[in-house]
Length: 423
Image (cartoon, rainbow, N blue to C red):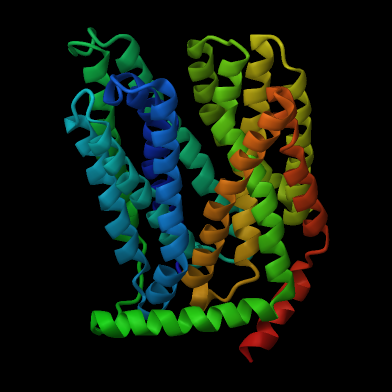
């Protein structure tokens, strides 16, 4: 097992690398640029629908292929190879977005879908390497380190990109469109550069040479066995359902916070600053949450995060002033990385190391599938109530239901079930 500081930080630095795509492209400039530039002659509601479908398609593709790819990677020790296969897909697509012209929304969406697949696909194998670079004693810290560096790295580059956008002449750009296109290229360079330590210093056993057909056959056979194993692991299955519910709430808040602020009439510049604030507060907050888990236990710290999310919902429902939106952003930053990191490390304790990528394929399957239900819940409640505040309040159901199911998960019993299933 590789647990040296160099190996740990080389692994965690990948989060610093690819989070640039999550902040600058996915959360930041692509949605704005898609509507104003790539879809310049398209109705606003139509372009919103196009973007929504693109996000759903990329998530659906990952949902469908994640478990299979994980099983193949485990059988043949190919986690790093697949990680960089998907990473370079995302890197290339991010750079190519700079070549798409005004009104070419079809090309922009095609590249965006492939870029999202690259980003999300690489994370499956990044998560699958967690057990290889950590021990049971430090897994919370290592997992949290990755998320915290992700917030910091994504925030650093995004702040530079925002500066480029706002002061494009200073950087020698002709207009804001040129600055945004350059920011897409900067994401590709950043992602490629800071992925290098993982490539060089995180080692994986070399697989024997086998044909693609054999890899696929082995992957499918192992996937079938994994479905059978998960049915035997009651506490692991229960955790996955609980995680599906509460992480759906987390993801929905991430996706809807800016739109909600816009619906309340807040200025877009305030929303961008709030997004930056989340990145920089999230860095130390995620590390702090891993320390909280030492005193409360990992499960107890997750419960604390769920309680804070309920407070966030209450504030969102009653919010009227822009300063409250900043408070909301800070509260989200305090718990967002923590609940993600601790959920990942908690799950890692209940899965077999030799099936890590395969089981994390299911974990990512659950996480990506969850992204469908929360926005749908908001949409349905909004249509029925005609009130955006009521629709946001409905997300509390996901946190409460997830917390109730998590209460019945016993990590120790889960480890025993795993031991018995593998005997």
